[in-house]
Length: 296
Image 1 (spheres, rainbow, N blue to C red):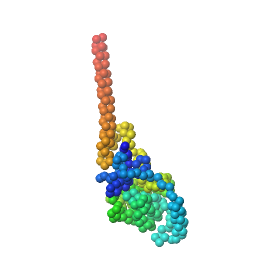
Image 2: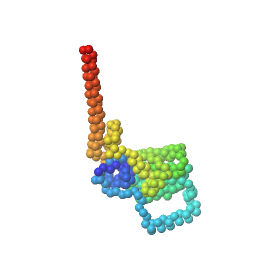
Image 3: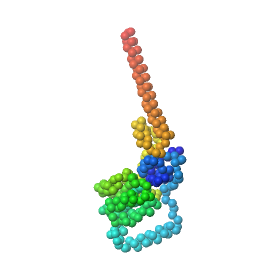
Image 4: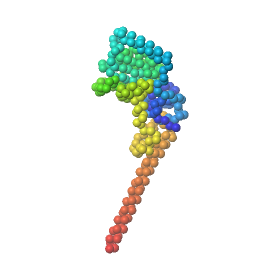
């Protein structure tokens, strides 16, 4: 059985891939895998799978969460030494998926008002130092952390999720954000995926970053194996080109696409032959009519 997915994390011996049903599969790593790459793989490639849905918290965790929330209310009354008010209003949310997965909330001045890890690798990072810094400063620190930490194996690609936290679109602000991130991650392959508040809410409910959720939506619109018959010849050629160098697109899948392409070409040739035969019959009929007219 074949699966289609998008690479989300790449480790030394394995990679995490988001399948079209929203589950994450751990597959054996192969040379050439990159974050954001769309691949085909089989059950034999999977090490394990897990759901992206949030697990129900146990009562003890809920109590601890309540205590933490109460403590946060108290802390909100204490001025922060870094000069950022804890009540600072977030204007936009940015998520980063590298190997660590994290989110950064910024205000309208591009100041980071909140930063948190979204997976185990992200929570292991010291993100408190990002608060109060500009996005340019904070993303620069993040880039340097990635390059300097030996346990982070992916150092050349990142999925960026972006959304405004209100209903207003601010293209000038968004363009500035893109410029900052492209400048700081200029040696990275950056996949930029934009969502909205509703997408962010669903992503949080699923326990994934906005970038990963938008990637999952993007997968839903992609060409699936069972839709090959609906593609035209040019589309099949492009599909074959796109996935010809994918590590997990094995020979059987390539043959399926090639077979469908050959069928399309054969059907096209048959139609041309039928058309030629019809033209020959028409020419013969015309010749008979001309001969009859001469006899008359």
